[in-house]
Length: 286
Image (cartoon, rainbow, N blue to C red; front, top):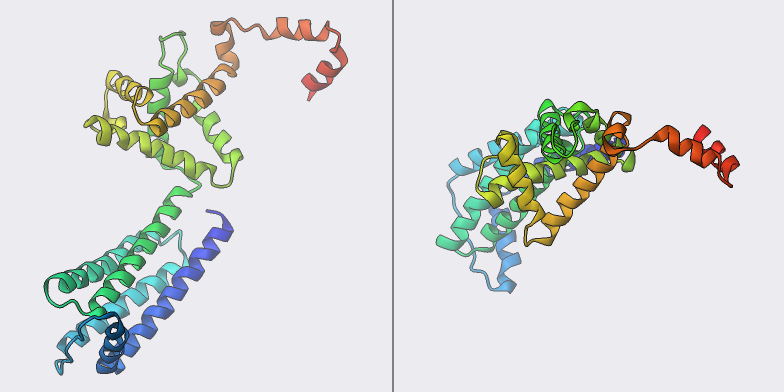
């Protein structure tokens, strides 16, 4: 993960921890005042007021929840990448709070405090999930599952014994593509992983089959053919881009040249015997 992104996530979750702690403390110390303030905010908008309650049992449960989310956010802020597994837990708590308040707003009382909490906690759940997705996508050390998925896609695109005796499995094509995306942009590996995931689960969404990596070789070729002939332009473009990059790197592997009739020595001799020999000699020497 880039250092700037790591710092931004630290700042984000430290801010969330401070906000959760402050909000929980205010709710605990001034429960009736909090309800009155939210009622006052919703009154000009036409929302009915939420009734006050002298019962404090729910307040103790709410305080426990706020302490928990504060501690989760504080722990994540210390090491967003190493503790990214806590982000979905934080998102689950906020999503539960959001959905229950939305349910009370719709089916019980359309009070402003229900709507406000549903919107705020729903947004916070999305923020936590988005941060988790960013950490996952920018992980610089691809998991074995990602490497296996890449090999499965490349084997289907350039199968052994297809147009040429050699296939992707006979070369370092997977490593070459990974290096290409790493050089392309700091977020290149993240985009590459998302592209592979699109193919992995595109088979489930569009073809109603198992994930791409769990298909047999023939089914994988059919799945890619479905991308190639899809009526959705982005699907066709995504596969065409991947196919172009894969074949471009495949054809530049020296072990593939004899199969495609490329004679590097012959072309070098022709270039060095031509009118721009000095230019080509300098270029080939670099």
